Image 1 (spheres, rainbow, N blue to C red):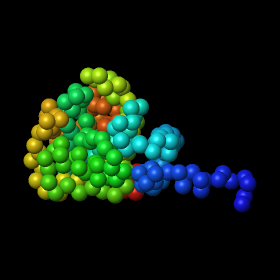
Image 2: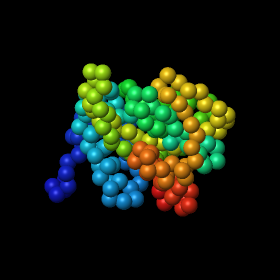
Image 3: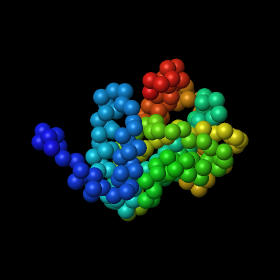
Image 4: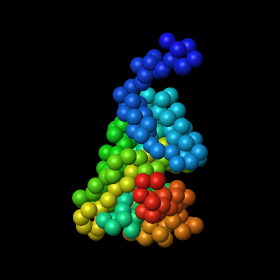
Length: 202
């Protein structure tokens, strides 16, 4: 054994199935810049330390999955005016024990939009750690949000559900330029624009 290399086999044996599934997903992320590398490392540390990382019962924070939900042409994104947070955001929600975060994102997109015939693109599109303030006795906590691109391949006639005040299709270009939008939502719109200009670079 090379004593200059860290021993990792013991760590691997102690990781639960959910942790291993999420870490494998994170390992496939391509990192275009140092800031994204730091975010990715933060997610990897969180998952490695917390066997219950997918459970909302983990009070300090937990994994969530969300969808950058595009129309068939990739020119518009569906946003929800979140009932609890009062912000225009992408559809998403808690993993609730499901380590398949792509499945979580797709499920949340379907439930919050009422759209059928949604298709998820492989691989993580974006990572974002954000603070959820205390609300109605629930302590403030972190959401480690794993985001995927989802496409509407059929009807784009959405249905507003109980978690939203409203839904709206917005041009990706407008979202990218709108300073009133959530910063991470603008980042995703800008990232999608960059991908459209230079496929394979984002």
